[in-house]
Image (cartoon, rainbow, N blue to C red; front, side, top):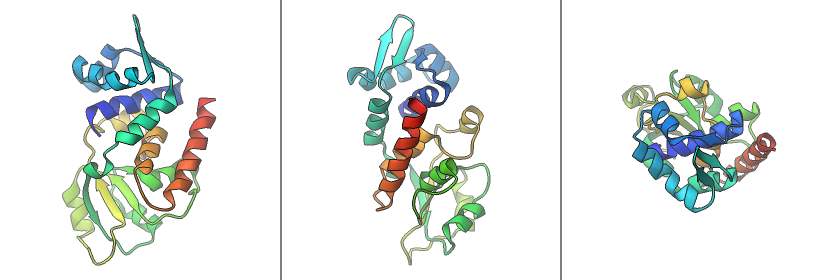
Length: 201
């Protein structure tokens, strides 16, 4: 993710899980080791569209859904993909074969959130740093359409430390699946929206 996306992500996660709607630019800059100008840039559009309101004490997330959908609309998921291949394994076996220290994304993450998948799926998305390791374990295979997609972990280095899980958060999972065109993606989006609404209200 871009740095500004990690900021949107954290603002959404903080509101959804911790019920923390108020933040400070200085606090975010220190937490992520970003410059204040980066945080200021990340807030520009959300403030303009009314998703965030600034005040003397910092800023407040005033419209969760507006920020979530804005992020979903500009998310460049394909630009994050660094490797893809076909692996001749059922999807759950493929997930189990992936090395540790990565972060499950997309449909796999949604399955972890719901314990039972909202729909059948046949693609695995995984955030992982050592791409060469995965290339050796899952060699290139273009004979069939890819079913394993590896994404950059850029700006997710502290993910496990902050979010304490091996799969993407609800906002992150929603945004990534929003950018997928598979026919079953809509079933996941619907289930994720319902889960988010439960936690918001």
